[in-house]
Length: 210
Ligand code: ADP
Image (cartoon, rainbow, N blue to C red; front, side, top):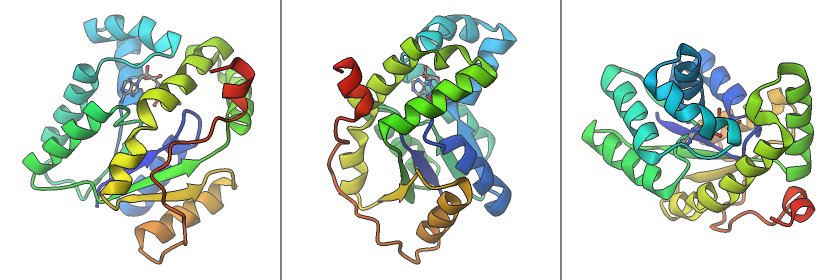
């Protein structure tokens, strides 16, 4: 089973992906984690992406697609993958479909974690104070949220047209979100409304006129 964890920055994608790794033996492929590792290692790739990431902008499709391709090639016998933070653009989604086809596989399910902008800002403010991740500063976070709304949210109709998209309430506590995701993956149905619409302009967009 191959799953995409979908949602805005700080929606809890990584947290839920890690739980699925533990519970279902899937492999988590987080492009954010891969890029941060590259940055930390000081590699050429790391140097190239550092500024882009710190500002909250998206790294080029070419780079992240290559990272994913490498991981898919390296894990031919995986039970399945959880894509976390990928794809983030339509070009990435199309590339992923092509890569999965090449591996005689497919994306089975796209789980969208719905969290309103006001809650995202609160979470990220707290994380910035606690962990000091550079791109969690208010200015970069604004850029990240804008990238999500303009470049990533257009993937919602792409996946809903394929009948793969399910929405989960990401405002609930971690255990409750996990339970909702488990229901979706086990096909018990959770009555989620699946629409091809892009998110409404939320608190953050109104605040910054984005
Ligand atoms: P979050 O989901 O909290 O924003 P991530 O860890 O997924 O954080 O990503 C951190 C940063 O890494 C992004 O802001 C972006 O610069 C870069 N990045 C990660 N994944 C991608 C991707 N699929 N396409 C382009 N850039 C990416």
